[in-house]
Image (cartoon, rainbow, N blue to C red; front, side, top):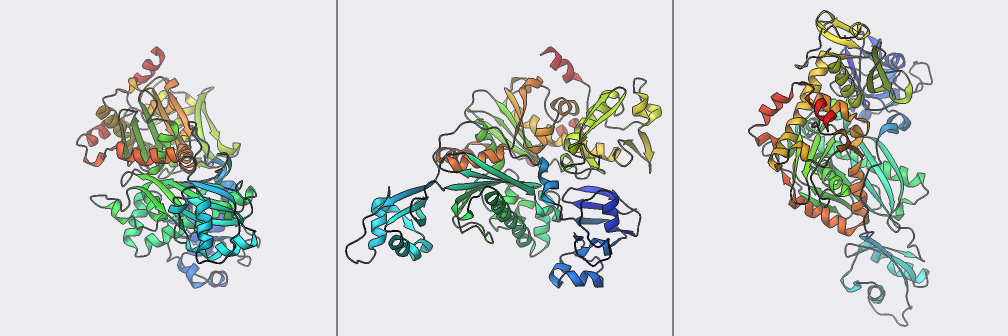
Length: 612
């Protein structure tokens, strides 16, 4: 039976060979438009089939030009599924963004933005002299003699001055005059902070005058159709001459779209946005800068760009008025500016004691330490926690099972949106595994037991869910959704990599888990994660649960702080020089620790928690 992977949700569906793709979407609740009942006359059911060799028929040629056909665009109503496919369905934003986390914790900061606006009431010159207008403005501005004028400003300078009767507002950034406007516009000074993840992208509109958040917009990363994690996207760039250009165009286009969406929604002119800040993993920030990330995928895994990066006129292809983009400190091939910005937003470098900050997405980044010393690493955990490579996995949108508990003798499932369960997202996967471990249905080795091997204490209703299909055990969660033995192995690989990385960081820091002041779990996954379940399966260390906190999207909060405070900006850039990067691939005991952490182990931590 062929398997279809639907992007951007990552949902996997097995179908009979020859089934119609539109009917598959209808049958399984994949939101898709169609106004002609599948007759091929409306063109609304357009999808992108990632296998570009998929057959083309006459109806497809009616609606798509040769470029779009070459990119894999087809009418779902005319497509027959004969083999495994990866299909990107343009889903409505309401379906996608409901669970993308944009809020997060952050310490208070002193407002001191890099972009400043000055209202000037100038005396018109009495005579003509070359350069007089430039000198007039320079003398009226703080540090004016040192300022450079952008060519675009010089072109309109005299015209604006004369038209406005020499009452103008000048926008200054980093020693340069960005703009000049008639009258007093100092109250209109905005910035946008972006958090660019492998799976999701969020944008926050910020008032640079007051420091207040105006609004947010979010979407799934359109690059997902080219690969589910950074390694697959690096490979895509390495294997295709135009790979980096394609991925850059996708992400820069989304940044433009989100900026337009969030400003329009709040009645702000995009022209009033004077600076953008972007945090993200190293692959994403390379692609935003138009830099091929291929070197990140081969020894010695060397980033082309390290430290803080500035694009004075924005990335190529961004239709955002040629305003500056800044990227905080990138530390290594797989440790980007997001974990650093998040740590500073939380005050980890200043707060007494030692903390563990974990940001789990398609890649897991871990920072440990405090004011005296900080270490950071990245673990190749794979994308299981985002539902990828899980047979019924999907991202955290409506229809995803996001929690599980044992009650009245059976499994009780929580479903996002409170509708029908369509698949399992990361937090649901962790919860289900933890409950099955408690019931003895999964043993310490990770083996999913058949009914006749389950312990006597295993509830009959749960045992009835155990089935063997194609020589592999499954737990039926609904008629369509299940957890398989293969899924449990994927979870073990992911949690073992994270746990091994945490152990190595804490050992090198000389800090046992019990001495940590807090374990901070960031990101969308952390916001829905049950800490008790995470400890039960071994993702995070066994410490009193009161020490474990979900802190939300701290990367976006760090990007916001970078916009609002030159002090924070300096701290984030400087912290890149203070943090010690630990490359797990060169750690001699990583594989041994990884193997040890594959086991789920006894419930020792439960005793520790009760006694703490």
